[in-house]
Image (cartoon, rainbow, N blue to C red; front, side, top):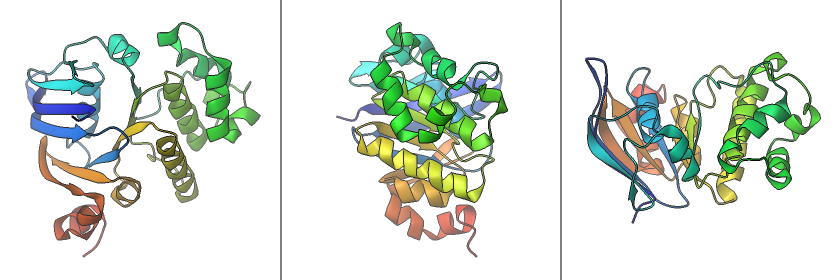
Length: 235
């Protein structure tokens, strides 16, 4: 049984039909990626899973429990954490304070969780008392991911972690995603950089205008002509 099971999900923004009958699965221990162009519905999918948006129809099952329509803070308490698009850190708070905010579902930050984040992101330890808003884009992305990990998620939702980052920082962030996965966290990754996403994922889905148009192993998607032309920049 999949850890996350989505069936025939329809989500609207006002009158706009953003997700049109999406179905996807994420098994425990996997990295699964959702790739697609801007406005295809990738972020909407994550927001619907995490409870920030309510689907009109369809079902979301997490660890055997239906969670669609569940408030976001309760979904977080069940073990689903999201690192949002655009990072959404608290700019006037320090690195440490941002991380502590991520532990709200447990009441208080556990020093062991903070140490785990610092082991994944040594750069954050060096800047523990720096205000997050004064950091580089890549460092802010580390704060956002670290904050999500403070909730001790069994499923981590990553929304565009490489957006706006330099190529070297993109490599760093994806290396950390692999480390997080090796430590036992299941990851659903939304990413415009399809090449990097498929390199770390075991399986992938391609979304276009709110519909899943392809689902396959990451290896097969990398060799698919449509994917290569549309998302990997090949002629």
